[in-house]
Amino acid sequence: MAKREDGKETRLRLLNAAGEVFAQKGYRDAKVADICKRAGANVAAVNYYFGDKKSLYREVWQHALENSEVGVFLETAAGSSQDRLRDYIRMLIHNFASKGNVGRFSRLYLMESVNPTGLIQSAWHETIEPRRRKLHDILREIIGPGVKDLTIRFCELSIVNQCRMFVTINRSDVEYMLGQPIDPKLINRLADHIADFSLAGIRAVGKRKT
Image 1 (cartoon, rainbow, N blue to C red):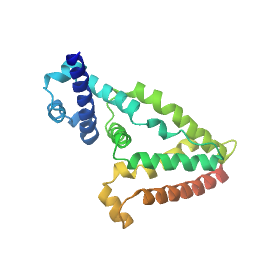
Image 2 (cartoon, rainbow, N blue to C red):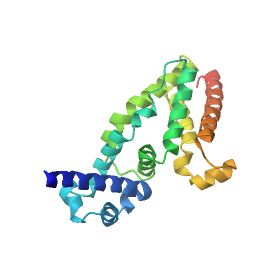
Image 3 (cartoon, rainbow, N blue to C red):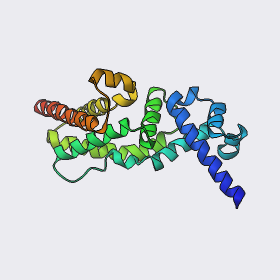
């Protein structure tokens, strides 16, 4: 029993360490030796528990999806479509600004977006696509009937990329640009600003219906 528990603990340490290294360096630049060193494990442990680096990467993503409260991405409260969009933006920017498991997932996501590996598409699509469809439905409600799918996707990209600054720009640079330290109150104010900015843009798009 002790050996089995030790094995579970080692496997978990490897998953957590790999998540940190992959989030920092991306799949291609991450070294198995660095992961094992951070986990306090023998290099052979990766082969023993996961088979190879590719399988470890897939397991890290699955672990991140299951443990990062990624459901926060779009489990919005009831209300008007505008209120639900505000909830979405608030939760998304908190996810990207988080330093915990959600933040790690966001950085993994960014690394995969910049340098796609093709290793996690199935898990990604199963988890993210349903939430994307919910966001698309909210945007359609705001814009009104007759809007084209590509227009909805343009709006989605505009919103997500405003919120993504915390993983695309160094945190200290964001603080420099804002002129003050980042704290929960500032993040909430920024989320409200992005929501106001986005809703004004979406309404303008709705008038064109293109």
